Image 1 (cartoon, rainbow, N blue to C red):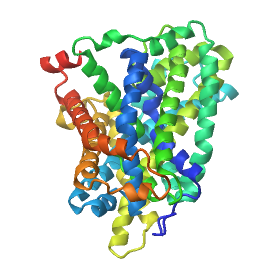
Image 2 (cartoon, one colour; image 1 turned 180 degrees about the vertical axis):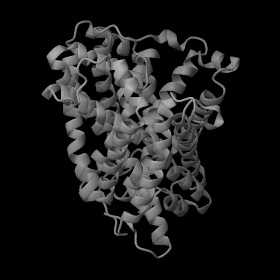
Image 3 (cartoon, one colour; image 1 turned 120 degrees about the vertical axis):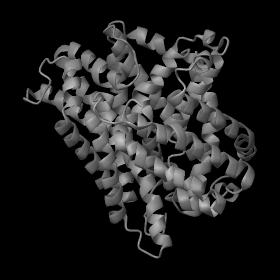
Image 4 (cartoon, rainbow, N blue to C red; image 1 turned 120 degrees about the horizontal axis):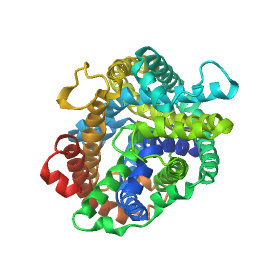
Amino acid sequence: MSDSGKGGFKSNFGFLMSAVGVAIGLGNIWSFPYKMGANGGFAFLLVYILMAVFVGYPLLLAEFSLGRKSGKGAVEAFRQANPRFAFTGVFETAVPFLLLCFYCLLGGMVMRYAVVNFGDIIGAPFGLHGMASSDFFGSFVSNFKVLAIFTLIFLGMTSYVVYRGIEQGIEKFCSIGMPVLFVMLVITVIRCCTLPNGMEGLRFMFKPDFSVFAGTGWFKVFATAGSQMFFSISLGSGALIAYGSYMRKEDNLEKSALIVPVMDTAAALLAGMAVFPAVFSEGLEPSAGPGLLFVSLQTVFDAMGKAGPLFGFIFYVLVFVAAFSSSIGMMEGGISALMDHRIRKGKPAGRGHVTVLITLTTLVGSVLVALDQLGGNPSVWKPFGLGSWLDVFDLGAEGILMPLGGFLTAILLGWSRRGFIDDEVRLSSDYRSRPFVDFCLRYVSPIFMAIVIFVQFSSFFFSGTGWYKALMG
């Protein structure tokens, strides 16, 4: 447990649930299953698993180990490994500030949908009451006041849990929230798979289609599976290094780095088994994005009759748990690094002061996203010619800084400070995976991360060009 005044995890279970909570987020609910279904089904899953083994596990172990060995957040952890790589920690610390600006708004929207479904259960005036889901979504997104209120509630709850600290805040919530999430997922899967034509949704996800590898198709599948794996586990966000710094020395790093991606993938598959049988049962388009989560699925719940609001409420509560656990993890990643800076200057960690600072910063970004109406307000200026402020923050974090952080981590531990984490891992295990991890960090991860950076950057700026369309299909 950390003795810096920042706090620490009381148990290995609490650490694991918190790390899994960071990994399981909104993207697991709609992004992973849709990409799997649209890119070869089981063929995509095989590529994803290979990426998780050869890239996800080594980088996850690296980030946990850097955090625990240094007892610090991203900036100081990289500084201790090699002062010339401290800027990598700065990149990773900036990620939470950008992600939270739209994540809290999406979390607030999930809360709103849980509330209106609960309203329909009890017959309250704040329910949907037969309004078409597309009409409700449009009126909600265009109503800045209501959107801002739910965003503020979600942000306030996130800040409060983080302010409470590791043991009494983050660990306590995730130790309860993650098991509850999996239980609700199973309940939702069982119900949705029994809907008429529900099996079509499972076929969409799992039917093997190796023809997607033909020509340059393999590159598209490789890039899509790889980028989804990287972002799904939350590598390069500063959160995993921060959580690693709060780990107990006796907790097994190798097992932890294995359990987190396994549980994250299981949650994504369960989410898909809930979402797509429901979507196909109503003959809806399985398109990715907020439309699937807030329009298509609400249409499905509306069609269930009296049981619809109940299952709608359960579903949006589980999505809330996923979003909330990721939100507190991201905020802690930024807060941990800022507390380190205060400690380095001879000041108290000041968790309360730092929490207020990042909350206010997030509030400013969230207002921009809310005013922009998820890109639906053409009167709001957007930089770089991007479609929305959500795209702006997403490009900065997921498109550039996160993959760049992963690339530099591989260079640091595979080449610059090879073997730097070995002694830390051996504190709690024999480190039998050491040859495998060393090979991956030296040769596999840098190449892979370079491809991810290329794909992410190109998808934002060159997606309309002929060469990009030819390569990505």
